Image 1 (cartoon, rainbow, N blue to C red):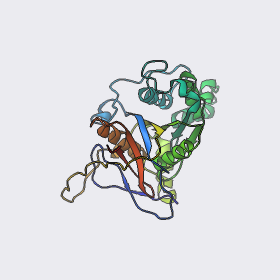
Image 2 (cartoon, rainbow, N blue to C red):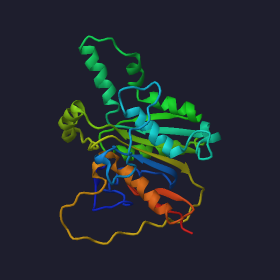
Image 3 (cartoon, one colour):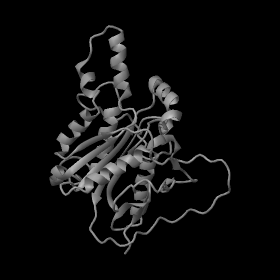
Image 4 (cartoon, rainbow, N blue to C red):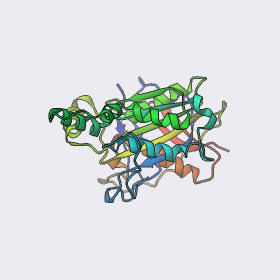
Length: 293
């Protein structure tokens, strides 16, 4: 069983410290380079001060209706990979050697609930809702735009879903045919049904917390060269007086670890290092740092 996360006081750039469990394999078999990262969070007042806050509604995606799940994935992936065919495109000719891992606890609940409500009301079922009810439908749209033909994987797990996403990406990067993996974490604001289900199963099944609103994170991980030098850890924050605190990343729920990883990568990169990597420091523990000079 996956170890549960235990958090210290943290600010932007700090990563979760996960409880040691000798029976669990490390998250990553070797350090992995973080080529790019992006976050998208709820727009409006709910997003004030959060990474990737969108000031306006996300652009619509042709063929996707009603739900913000697919536009959210589309927007965060484009921010992470750059516009297809542009000078910022991080896929380019590497499309056949690019894999994708999408992690979500409940998936597109808006589409599922809308389709169910229409069925109960005796209305004609919309073909678009049937199409986009499959989580990989937006991935198919994106892989066509970027020319990605590598493996597509969708994950849902009760506990430590972010860790499982990193572990899946690590396994893919161990394959010779894969050079980079796009890791996506996404969840829409929990509706009435998702909240009801989560509230009744979280304690029994160990479900991770849900985010407070729509949120998505994308990280592009790549293989690094062999014989890497030791990594420089991030500077520790000074001790603070004991007392109840609310971490800055708490509204992200289970996406918190992915958001903190993206923010830590940006923090390290701002120091003008040549390469940012994520690496395991023990069972279900991971940390971001630069390559040592």
